[in-house]
Image 1 (spheres, rainbow, N blue to C red):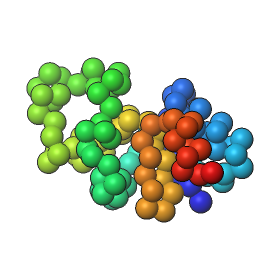
Image 2 (image 1 turned 90 degrees about the vertical axis):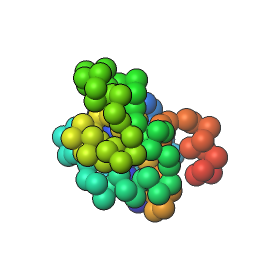
Image 3 (image 1 turned 30 degrees about the vertical axis):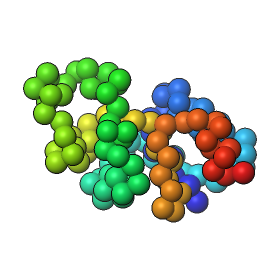
Length: 114
Protein backbone atom coordinates (compact mmCIF):
# COMPACT_ATOMS: atom_id res chain seq x y z
CA UNK A 1 0.00 0.00 0.00
CA UNK A 2 1.23 3.47 -0.88
CA UNK A 3 0.61 6.62 1.11
CA UNK A 4 0.37 9.96 -0.68
CA UNK A 5 0.87 12.98 1.57
CA UNK A 6 -0.35 16.36 0.40
CA UNK A 7 -3.31 18.71 0.36
CA UNK A 8 -6.45 18.13 -1.70
CA UNK A 9 -6.35 21.36 -3.72
CA UNK A 10 -2.66 21.12 -4.73
CA UNK A 11 -2.29 20.63 -8.50
CA UNK A 12 0.72 18.33 -8.13
CA UNK A 13 -1.16 16.21 -5.60
CA UNK A 14 -4.13 16.00 -7.94
CA UNK A 15 -1.86 14.83 -10.78
CA UNK A 16 -0.24 12.21 -8.55
CA UNK A 17 -3.61 10.93 -7.34
CA UNK A 18 -4.91 10.75 -10.90
CA UNK A 19 -1.79 8.85 -12.03
CA UNK A 20 -2.03 6.36 -9.16
CA UNK A 21 -5.74 5.78 -9.83
CA UNK A 22 -5.22 5.40 -13.60
CA UNK A 23 -2.50 2.83 -12.96
CA UNK A 24 -4.58 0.87 -10.45
CA UNK A 25 -2.14 1.53 -7.64
CA UNK A 26 -3.86 1.35 -4.25
CA UNK A 27 -3.04 4.28 -2.01
CA UNK A 28 -4.19 6.19 1.02
CA UNK A 29 -4.29 9.98 0.85
CA UNK A 30 -3.01 11.77 3.96
CA UNK A 31 -4.06 15.43 4.09
CA UNK A 32 -1.14 17.14 5.81
CA UNK A 33 -3.15 20.25 6.55
CA UNK A 34 -6.08 18.41 8.18
CA UNK A 35 -4.20 15.43 9.62
CA UNK A 36 -0.80 17.01 10.27
CA UNK A 37 2.60 15.38 10.24
CA UNK A 38 4.63 13.80 12.98
CA UNK A 39 8.33 14.05 13.63
CA UNK A 40 8.39 10.29 13.09
CA UNK A 41 7.04 10.75 9.51
CA UNK A 42 9.59 13.46 8.79
CA UNK A 43 12.52 11.52 10.25
CA UNK A 44 11.58 8.54 8.09
CA UNK A 45 11.56 10.69 4.95
CA UNK A 46 14.81 12.42 5.84
CA UNK A 47 16.57 9.05 5.78
CA UNK A 48 15.91 9.04 2.01
CA UNK A 49 15.89 12.70 0.95
CA UNK A 50 17.90 15.79 1.77
CA UNK A 51 16.12 18.27 4.05
CA UNK A 52 16.47 21.05 1.47
CA UNK A 53 14.47 18.98 -1.04
CA UNK A 54 11.70 18.37 1.50
CA UNK A 55 11.30 22.08 2.36
CA UNK A 56 8.98 23.97 0.01
CA UNK A 57 10.39 27.48 -0.22
CA UNK A 58 7.93 28.39 -2.99
CA UNK A 59 4.82 27.98 -0.85
CA UNK A 60 2.56 30.68 0.49
CA UNK A 61 3.30 29.39 3.99
CA UNK A 62 7.03 30.03 3.41
CA UNK A 63 6.37 33.58 2.21
CA UNK A 64 4.20 34.21 5.28
CA UNK A 65 6.98 33.26 7.71
CA UNK A 66 8.93 36.14 9.17
CA UNK A 67 12.24 36.96 7.57
CA UNK A 68 13.98 35.85 10.77
CA UNK A 69 12.24 32.44 10.62
CA UNK A 70 13.19 31.96 6.96
CA UNK A 71 16.79 33.01 7.54
CA UNK A 72 17.25 30.63 10.47
CA UNK A 73 15.90 27.41 8.95
CA UNK A 74 18.41 24.58 9.00
CA UNK A 75 18.52 20.85 9.52
CA UNK A 76 18.51 21.22 13.32
CA UNK A 77 15.18 23.07 13.53
CA UNK A 78 13.46 21.71 10.42
CA UNK A 79 11.38 19.04 12.21
CA UNK A 80 9.84 21.55 14.58
CA UNK A 81 9.06 23.94 11.72
CA UNK A 82 7.49 21.29 9.48
CA UNK A 83 5.35 19.79 12.23
CA UNK A 84 4.13 23.30 13.08
CA UNK A 85 3.59 24.19 9.38
CA UNK A 86 3.05 20.94 7.44
CA UNK A 87 2.25 22.84 4.24
CA UNK A 88 5.96 23.72 4.12
CA UNK A 89 6.60 20.17 2.94
CA UNK A 90 7.09 19.99 -0.81
CA UNK A 91 4.14 18.09 -2.22
CA UNK A 92 3.20 15.45 -2.83
CA UNK A 93 5.24 12.97 -0.83
CA UNK A 94 4.69 9.40 -1.96
CA UNK A 95 5.79 6.77 0.52
CA UNK A 96 5.89 3.10 -0.36
CA UNK A 97 7.84 0.93 2.04
CA UNK A 98 11.31 2.48 2.22
CA UNK A 99 10.74 4.47 -1.00
CA UNK A 100 10.09 8.19 -0.58
CA UNK A 101 9.39 10.35 -3.62
CA UNK A 102 9.04 14.13 -3.33
CA UNK A 103 6.99 16.05 -5.88
CA UNK A 104 5.24 14.56 -8.90
CA UNK A 105 6.82 13.58 -12.19
CA UNK A 106 4.90 11.22 -14.43
CA UNK A 107 8.12 9.88 -15.93
CA UNK A 108 9.63 9.17 -12.51
CA UNK A 109 6.47 7.47 -11.31
CA UNK A 110 6.42 5.33 -14.44
CA UNK A 111 10.10 4.49 -14.07
CA UNK A 112 9.62 3.50 -10.44
CA UNK A 113 6.40 1.52 -10.78
CA UNK A 114 6.41 -0.01 -14.26
